[in-house]
Length: 208
Image 1 (cartoon, rainbow, N blue to C red):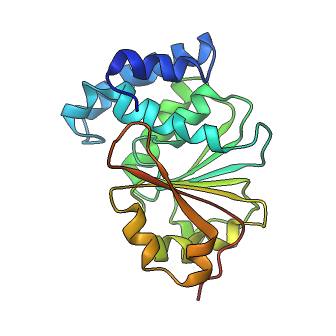
Image 2: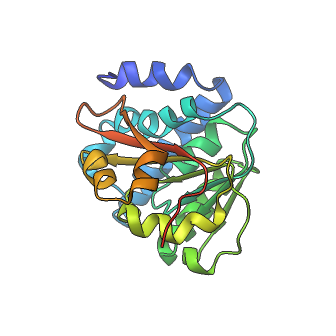
């Protein structure tokens, strides 16, 4: 379990290079400035940004093959996990979907400010995004599991890896799903939140 900003920085540094760490430092400054304009994250969480947001996002990389197809991040909001992953892994192609206009504009500005060429921001509802085969699908606080799967199943293939941070509700949400979904996913312990869980799965969910 990661505890404290020093440990969280070390965790991130082990999963990117010096340039990636510099981009995260720049991202932290951009986020603090923008948070004074619009409430992207709680002010308290900015004091623990490396643990609460950066390491929390970057832990997902441990479940992904080194080479993978485009990564779909739904409801990217303030940039977690999508913008963090794009900043630290320039070899990955990230597609960030955010329907809220001010937040999608922020994601676009931040991506440009960080010089990211591997990150595409789509300011649209997921229902209106053209289908493409995603190697990885992530969502942090996007929608309840059942609705999330219904909206995003069309982007998945049998090889798609699903990484869905669900906090303390992970096991409970999974338990309410049909058997095929329960068999497809399992819960992994979050490394940044003792009570948090991540739903991990692979394939195309059988949804009604």
